Image 1 (spheres, rainbow over the protein chains, first blue to last red):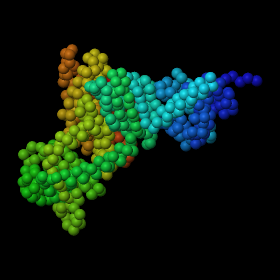
Image 2 (image 1 turned 90 degrees about the vertical axis):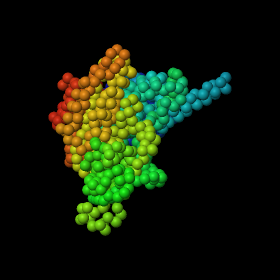
Image 3 (image 1 turned 135 degrees about the horizontal axis):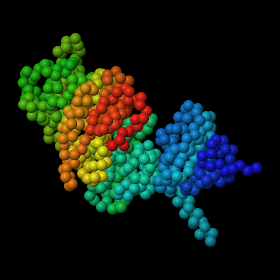
Image 4 (image 1 turned 180 degrees about the vertical axis):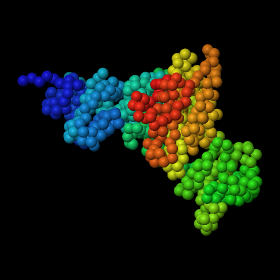
Length: 128
Length: 459
């Protein structure tokens, strides 16, 4: 049985990502950063690693908003996850953003995903 | 072969460590061209700049900061040297956060010109630091007032309501006032428009609370000439002994010193920190500090506070048709008209681009509207000389008033935001009515979801 590779805007993507192996994450065409309730990065795929110039060992186990992607630590992104966690509500929103990958300003779309339980959360990155 | 692979691997690891070092640097770093096009930028810069960027892009540093620091491009272009510090630690006040209490409110920006093609910017959130500094600055002013060698001073006793209790030689020496001054409020020493009855009492209350109240500014002599003075008000330590029910009993000491000779130095310091580079008006920092102080005062002793937002009509057309230098001359002309039209006690500020604000303490809607209308009419008669003839221009204005007891007065941060929002909505209404027009905020406006948050693009 083969499952079609999910795309950036596939509905219900968080569950699919939860169930994906590292190889499956690495095969995706967009960046995946998965983090837990304490904002510690748990998953990091090849596309994201390549774009940022950081190997997974430098990123996994580190707090996302302070040690991995400080550029997301404002009300546009980090606050959204915090608010969702405070309200125990689900978050699935896509916003235009600019990342500073390898110190170049890169226009991207970010998809912010959090389940109501807040256990697994994702920032997905696609270039625009 | 193995060695070569090893050294390539080592280079790769070093490169990665370097990248991570820059990712994690706790200050914002940007390298851009002289006209602001961003070449390299680190994550903290994006964290701080993205919420400000009007177009959601980070392609141009000056464009990203346009709304809060409109004169960067000009300052950079006017910097005369081939390389060097354009400015260091410039404070940029952000629009007090609608988003979150923890959002930065003050950024510090340092701009270094590397050569004729590149600039480097350092950006930091200094909100907490500035708060601490402000407290220190106040203590400094106090020490300055007592430690500086005093050549002459007037010592004036005031009663509980700030009226002058008795006369002595020192009052005559410094101010020229005779004995008839007894019974007048101490505002008699202030030039017209520099004091309101509410401010008069505010200073007494601040002296009660802090042990002293100090300010510097122009004061008036009996012959109507003016001098630059430092004025310290302190509660008298044993005033209870005079009996608190005796209304004419001395309750405060006012020490008035002529410091005209120090004015140039202190004005220069003040201007560097609190004035808009192009127009010389108050900058955003000065505006928000004044607003915070006024709201704080209004929370203790209720009084109305009015805000008028002015916006030059279709200003983009002026820039497009006559060029940016001519556009700047129009802004300078508008600033001059604003300065001449309002009182000394009012704060006249440039908030960004062609947007100006006037904060009017102890002023109701009718007076504020009249003041705005006066300015609008005055501007409509003015012509600004330019290479291609003379430029006529107009302004629109939005007026909003915070009334005593209104919800916003209790929370100063929320208060000024709300006031700006309302004045902005009124300004948008004035633009919609065909420009060259003044409108006042009404409660119906806030229900209208169609009104965009910022009127900036309304022309």
